[in-house]
Amino acid sequence: MLLDRLWGSEVEGVLDRLSEHPALGGPDLTYFKALLADRRGDQATARRLTTRALDALPGHEGYLRFAAQIGAPLPARAEAAAGARLERLMSNPG
Image 1 (tube, one colour):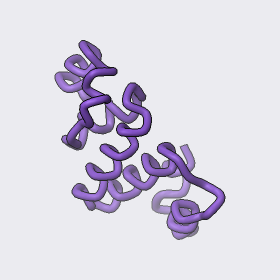
Image 2 (cartoon, rainbow, N blue to C red; image 1 turned 45 degrees about the horizontal axis):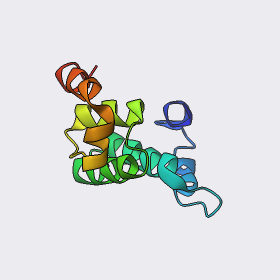
Image 3 (cartoon, rainbow, N blue to C red; image 1 turned 180 degrees about the vertical axis):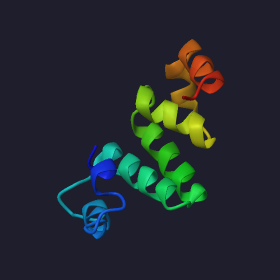
Image 4 (spheres, one colour; image 1 turned 45 degrees about the vertical axis):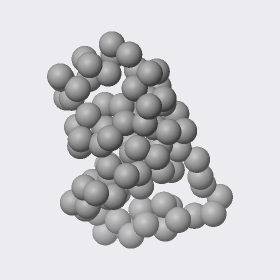
């Protein structure tokens, strides 16, 4: 993933510019911002953004897994879409 390649490099600032670029948007960008916030230690923002991404794509397994890892609250639609898979992810977030 781009975040992994650029994080900690001399061009890490590109990540901020990407996260605010007007050509990008949607739940994947919201999730990207959540991952970036998590890397920076801003757990409250990471949780809020992950919940927002899950509100748009409630059954996305990657979003659900990350939500379990960081303890993000799940929107009702995400809980309903995930069903038994959610319990499995919460008990084994890795």
